[in-house]
Structures are given as structure tokens and as C-alpha cells.
Length: 212
DNA sequence: TGCCAGGCCCTCTTTAGGGCCTT
Image (cartoon, rainbow, N blue to C red):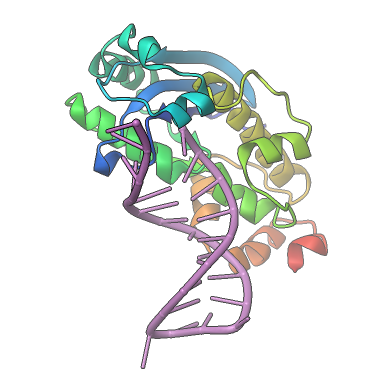
């Protein structure tokens, strides 16, 4: 059992590019330990950015909702205190890490936490999956649907469920005794081709589907 | 009002192009 604490994060935003002015509208972080959620943080935030209609249609988050929310800098400072030095995880982490760094930088806070990515891990551990979207994987593995998709807390909790499922697969199918954050970072860094050899070294042979 | 990016991965590749994934 992996008892290491990890912080699974999800942002809702006004778009896909913080470098071009997009801002976060909501953040949620769940702390997991041994595959169990032990604490939660969630808040809308007012970054003063306009939310396009199609984003509101996707997330349900309106301009009025964020205008009534605390300032982004205040929320991010609370989020940073909540996370501390806990290693982080996100679904498509390159996206959430960019917003984590961008919003913390605006708040005058340095971001140093390493990010593991459940998309990269899923591609390596479940190469047979036809889709690696969060919702598709949750459905495929019959994981709990923790609320409305495309809201930060629900997506963070579903990503945490997926993380626990990946860790369990590594333990049960591949004999990885301790799939902690450092192991996951190592696994996502090596090429997909190298993963077969790496995991095979932990014990049980991979399935045919995984060796394709 | 509503445009946009970036990293990873595959292949009809590597002097490239396109799909996936996130909002």
C-alpha cells in the first residue's frame, strides 16, 4: 500500500493558454493517502478575466460567479499553503502545471512541486485504452463519478480515483511494491517502448495487449 | 466578443505532420 500523500489538482480556466492571458476561474485540490482522499480544497477565484460563453457552457461557471469570488491571489495563497511541499498530480499535468505556476507567480509565490501526469501514466499502463480522456477512463474502469464533470473538485476527485487505480494496477499486475510519486515520475519520463521492459522487470509478464 | 498553446506520441518519421489532452 502506498501511504505517501499526494495532491491531485484541477483548474477550471477561461481558456487553454495562460501565456496569452487566460486565467484560472476555479481550483480544487484533493490530498490522497493510500488511495483515500484525506482532505479537500476548492474555491472559485476572481482573476478579473472574461469567461467566454462556450467555457460557461462547458463548466457551468459564469462571470457573475467569479465576480462574487475571492481574489485569485488570495485563493492561490491558500492553495499553496494547503499543498505545502506535497508532490502533485494532475490529468494532463502540463496544462494544470502551467496555470499553477502562472497564478502562483502572479500571487508572488514560487511553485516548486513536481507534477506527475495521469494522462502520461495511463498511456503507459493502459496502452490498449481507446481514449485517455478523464471521463473515458473513469467510465472504462467504472470509477466513482464524484460530481459534475468540468467542475474542479469533481475532476480532481476523479483524477485521484484514476491515480489510485493506476497504482493498484502497477502493484497487482506488474508487482511494483511501492508505486510512489518518484516511481510515477520515472515511469512517465521514459518512452512508452521502454515501459514494457521496465514494468516487466518488476515481476509478472505483461499482457499481450500491453506488449503491442 | 472570443481568438489562442504546449507537450507527448505515432507514423505513410527523423530535414515532418497531425492527433490527443487540458479549458
